[in-house]
Image 1: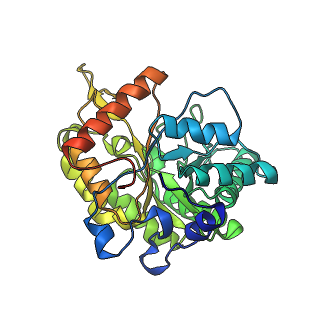
Image 2: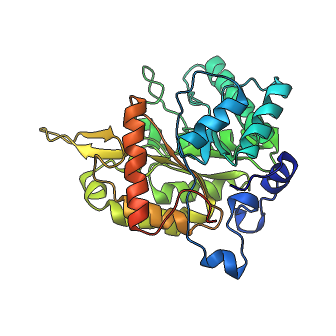
Length: 323
């Protein structure tokens, strides 16, 4: 397996292209004709269950799980030496750090909490920039007073939209990242909840460092999207593809009751069209990672990973670089 030196890895990660807000470097398949004929491949990632905090051992654990992408390991923004060690170890083993998650409510009713949460996310983007992660991601927030990510009618209000725009600009302008991006994860009951609302946010935020974190299952909030999720996936990649920097992989099933009840399950145990998902993702030249999440055990992740591998094989898609 080819590995990249830390210096080359960091230099290439810094090569984000302003034109089209696309990505370049080792995350993009080379533009030369020979590379374009190679088998398409996707960087798959997910949690690992190694009982260690050593960056080298963590990076190896990802490779041993068949992963070429990872969630950012736990590290404090001020721990410069550990950040350097993580960057070097994951680069050495060609495992891209996909995202720094900062799951807090930037729409909290309390001004004090809102400001603290905004700082948490700002620090998250600074960490993503320092460690070479592709993005820092949070939801836009919620007006729900009891559940920080919960539904609320004001989550679709003009005021919510305006504050989401202001928060994104504030975070990006404070950090001024050169390579990392800031993203909102799509949600079924808060902006951005659709392809078009995400596109509208991109135009309104108007920052090159604002990008798309795609979780198609989170967009499925009605029977039509559930049954026509192939159309939804195609629409996502057609309209948002060049801005997508990381994706979440899970699945949805419908528990039939007297009202609509979708439930998250592992990839392959639901109805998401993974063939379309993988084919569309593999077409993107900047190669956004696909990250599994929300599963209960290592065994469930193994089953989900195997399903993705199997669907990839059926569609001529690999999960490691062509030799």
